Amino acid sequence: MKNLAKYLKYYKLQVILGPICKLIETLLELSCPILVAKIIDHGISSGDTSYIVKYGLIVIAFHIMCFCFAVICQKCAAVSSVGIATKIREDMYTNINNLSHAEIDKFGTSSLLTRLTNDVSQIEVMVSILIRVMIRCPCLLIGSILLSLSINLKLSLVFLVVIPVLAIILTIFTKKTMPFFKLVRQKLDIVSRITRENLSGVRVVRAFNHQDEEKERFFEANEKLVKTNIGVSQISALLNPLIFLIVDFAIIAILWFGGIEINVGGLTQGELIAFCNYMITLSNALIATSRIYVNLVRTTASAHRINEVLQARSSVDFADKKVSVIIDENQPILEFKNVGFSYDRYEKDPERMFVKNLTFNLMPNQTLGIIGSTGSGKTTVANLIARFYDCNTGEILLYGKNIKDYPVKQLRDIVSITQQRSTLFSGTLRENMQIRKNNATDDEIISALKTSQAWDFVQNFPNGLDYKIMAGGKNVSGGQMQRLTIARSLIGEPKLLILDDSASALDFLTDLNLRKALKKDLNCSTILISQRTTTIKNADLIIVLDHGDVVGMGKHKDLLKTCSIYRETYHSQTQREE
Image 1 (cartoon, helix red, strand yellow):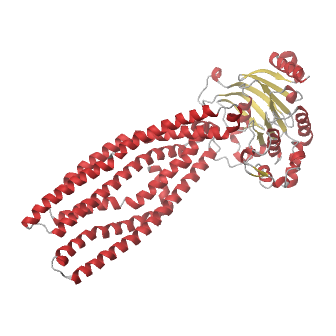
Image 2 (image 1 turned 180 degrees about the horizontal axis):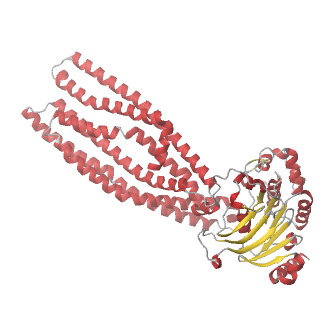
Image 3 (image 1 turned 45 degrees about the horizontal axis):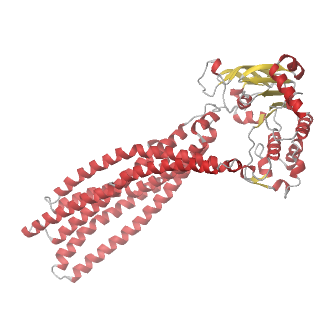
C-alpha cells in the first residue's frame, strides 16, 4: 500500500479537500444530539415554542450543511479514486510492455489481465472509502466518547468497556480473513485463465466436441472460487451482527443506569437520549470501521499483486541505450558465438540449456535456413536474435557489435520478425500494415503485399487497404493472415528479416513464389525457419537443430551427404510431395 501512496500526489486538492469536508460534516453531525437534548430539556419541558423553533431550525441548517459537505467529499472521492486507478493501470500497462517474454511468461496473461482489472478496481474502491471515511470514523468514535464524558462521567464507563471488546473482535476477524482474500485472488486468476483459453480456442473446443469437458473444467475451478468466497463471507457475515449485539447490550445498560441517574437528578431525559444517539453513532462508526478493515485486507492482497507487476524489471535491459550504434557493413550482419540459452536465465550448465553452444556467421544479403523437429529450438533462436530473451552464455553480434549495445528502436529497425503465431489487430488493413512504420505510404504497403503474395486477394477486399480486420484476424484465412504478417514485416526496409515458420499454411506453389519474390525484391539478409526442406534448400547456409544441439551445418548438397537427420527429413518430404 505504501508504494501506491505516491499516486495520491496527482490529486492533492481532492485528497485534502475531501477529508476536510467530511470532518466538518462529522462535527456538525456530532453537534445535533446536544441540540436535540436542549430542545427536549429546555423547550419541550417548559413549552417554549420559540426555543424549539430556534434550535429546530439550527438542527435543520446543520443537516443541510452536512448534505452539502458530503456531496463535495463524494465528488472529491470519485474524481481522485477513478483518476488514481487510471494512472495505476497506465503505469502497469507501460511496465508490462517493457517486460521481456520471460517475465510475461512468469506472470501469465490471465493473471496480468486480472491484476489490471479486478485488483486495480479494488484499489479504486479503497481510495474512495478512505477519502470518505478515514476522517469520519475516528472523529465519530472520539467525538462520541468525549461528548458522552461531558454529559455524564459514570454513564460513559459503558463506552470504555464496549470499545476494547469491539477492537479485539475486529482484530481477530482481520487475522482470520487475510489469508482467504489472497486465496480468492489466486482462484480468480485460474477462472480467468480457463475462461480466456475457452473463448480464444472456442473453434478447437467445438471441433473436437469438447464442450462438456471444458464446462466441467470451468465449473470445477469456479466452484473452488465460490467455496473460498463463501468461506470468507461466512466469517465476515458474523462481524456486523456481533457488533450490533454488543451495542444493543450497551444501549440497554445506558437506559438502565441512565434511568437510575434520572431518578436521582444526575441526568436529564434529553441527555439520556443524546447518550443513546451517541452510542448508535459509535456503533455505526465501528461497523463502518469493520467494513474498512475488510476492504483494507482485500486491498492489501490486491496492492501486493499490483506492486509485483510495477516492480518487475525486464531481464532484457534496454535502459539508457540512447546512442545509436555505428554500423560497419563489412562485418557479418549476424554472428553467434557459443550461444547457450535456458528459460531459467540463471542456468549455466551447458547440458541443461535449451540451445547449446550455437556458433555461426551470416553475411549481408545472405540467406540462412534453420530446420529441425518440433521443440528443437528454432523459434528460440529467432527470439534471441530479436532480443525477446537474452542468452545465458556466449554473445550475439549484429554488424560486429553486441546485440545488447543496441537501443531498442535501432534494433527493431534493423531486425524484423514474422513470428510463428500470426497476429492481426482490430482496425483497417492499412493500420495493421503501418505497425512497423507509422508513416508507411500506400505504395510501400502495396509493394510489400505484392512481395508477400498477398496483393491478389487484398485488392479484392471491400475497400482495399481500408478493409476492416476483426480482432485476431478472424475474418481472414490462416494462409492470408500469414502473408499479411509477412508483408507487415517487409515494410520499413529491414536489414535482417526473420520468417519463423511463417509460411506453414501456404501451398507449395505460393511458398515457392514467395521465396522467389523475397530473393528478387529484398536487399537484406533473411533467416528462414521451417520444417520444410524445400523452403530452405537454396539458402546460403542451413543449420539443422535437434533438441538444441547443432547436428548439421552447411549447404543443402553437403547436408544430404553429412547429416542423417537432414537427409531423412528431405527424402521423407520429397517422397510425400511426389
